[in-house]
Image 1: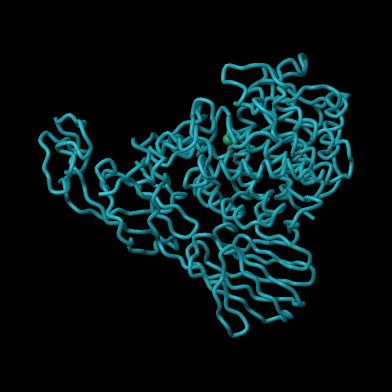
Image 2: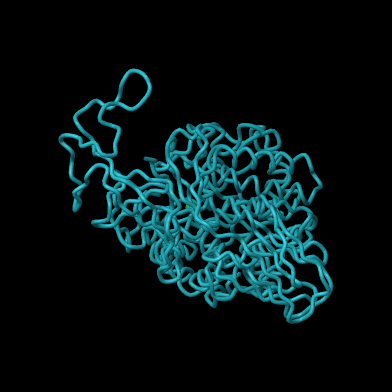
Length: 621
Ligand SMILES: [Zn+2]
């Protein structure tokens, strides 16, 4: 099977790239763009920035201490995509490996001298994942040999020590290599890395031990904290270890961490991590829209964690969050042309940012999408995730076929072949045509927002969901089942404890979060208050846009905007009230109380029309 995650136990078994094929559509188009544009874009920039030259011994060495991992992530993407450039890059990497399996272009002369920041084991993790991808998609070759030698080196060097890496990642990689090869010591090494953490295993750092999840043992934590990507990779590795060793206590601990994190530390988009300083989760309900970090890699890591928990438990809730994150973080990062990427994914952009194309961004910034970054983790993570995306669509429980995500696709499982037709996420109708049949169950996920969903087959229509709906029959070619998920726009209101967006509302439609975007002379978002009435829909180039009604408020006036007692301060309550001395925004003559139509676009499409201001959470009139 060709899939990044193949647990040997669990409620569901994954279906891989060999049995799920995407056709043109929302995801099929992106997977094609990835294969045809994104991977080569990453390859060119890494060559240009010297990160591949580092493996050739070119000096001075260039890039950050973890830049080797970028080549490995890209190799993983190339392996899933069957990219013809893989053997050459793999040979370049292989030439830098030392006799005992050690491989790192930054630390080779001073190996393992900085576990807190050195990222050596982190880099191996990505190398091993690339090796597993190559093994499953192609078979043994130079890359799989390099990966196994590195894994053997890690086991030799670390099995009996108390050390670990400041950046988790190697844990899930070792478990997957165990799954792919059957070599037990890779699993044992991963288990020990998970158990060591929090004893503590690392030295103190100025950001505190929670930054790299060394503040308490994994199984004792109740919520994800610290650096978001680190936390989510560690949790993913812990699920893998728990599933393979039958450690239910560890699995339940991660489930509880997931629940608490989703309930209190997750953006509407599925994004995770609200702090820029340490790329970290904030406190509970600390979810500022404009200061949202919501790193693309954290979104990808969240999808990885939810996918693992879905396979382990079968609970639709995990697929719901994965879907939210796929459409609103994963799909948001790459520009429509696949040549620039968001690193951070804020939900509010106050000042139209400068274009960043063609330059290397030295911040993880809040600008427009950039072609490349000093720390370019996100583009390569996009490349490997899109290349393996079909593996996330469906799974099996014995003979039963479970479909979790909807896209035009062909899916095969044990003599049953389906062709899925849908315009999802623009339409909520999904039709599964049986191409090859046998008796059995077909289980379809019904997303939590899809109130009133129905399933039609065999001439009858019945309510579907919540969670999932099952159709059972002796399937014959020509049979059809149709799932109808009501695709209505809806206003969403935040918990009052999310103080940063109190008094605001957002618009969603199906799995998509929408945003208001203002380019050029369009109404300035700083002066807009929304009227939460059902937005009008219109389809523009196949994309469903919404038109929300709003009114303009007076800009800042001379009155002190605070007062004793509750209620609005003088001059704050509009509509209809003119304020003296109002500022006039560029290109616009705002009149307080004037009603305007807000063009709402899917959040994942923002920033594709040039510099713009944007907001997901709109203040209510
Ligand atoms: Zn990243």
